[in-house]
Amino acid sequence: MRVVLTGATGFVGSRVLRRLLAEAGVTGVTCLTRRPLDVRSDKLTVVRMDDFAHYEDALLDRLAGHRACVWTVGGSASAAKDPVEYERVTHTFTLAFARALVPRLTGEFTFCHVSARRPGPGAAARRATRAPRDRTEQDLTALARGHEGFVPYAFRPGGVLSERAGAAGRLLLAPFGVGVGDLATALVRVACGDVPPPPLVLRNADIRRLAR
Image (cartoon, rainbow, N blue to C red):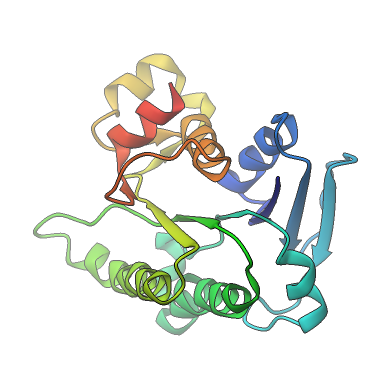
């Protein structure tokens, strides 16, 4: 199978790329990226993008033969200082891709979208950053209702821990987040067909279970 990946130069996406290239069942990975990659592989195709909100017909025709996408482009909490840009990166880009590609699909297509955990009571600042993500999840679900083969999964880690956290650090912070390696592994497993039962929202415990 072939897989589309966005955000391959980022913290999560770079780990996903390595795992996809190592996956025997993945015959090709098409990365949509603004910056060049320092990774080389016969499986890898790099498509430089200036604007993630617009897609040429020729590119969409090429991507229609893929069977999954791992979407790791999204606004970080620090980017929320500019609400307009945060909305554009978190919601507009994601839906622009999905809405452009879905009409061209001829079979089942799994869309693994990295979202974020919903904040608890009293976290007013984080709730403001959550709103565009909620709209993204809702709009992807609505798109799926109109296209039977399109299956979106929302991954909601509470936080993503680097490898430097170590085993003890990951254990201590387990209630609040997941390791970046576990998240990347879970994303690849779902994209490649190791699909959990509904609901199609995966939280910390679900992500760790898939990674194991």
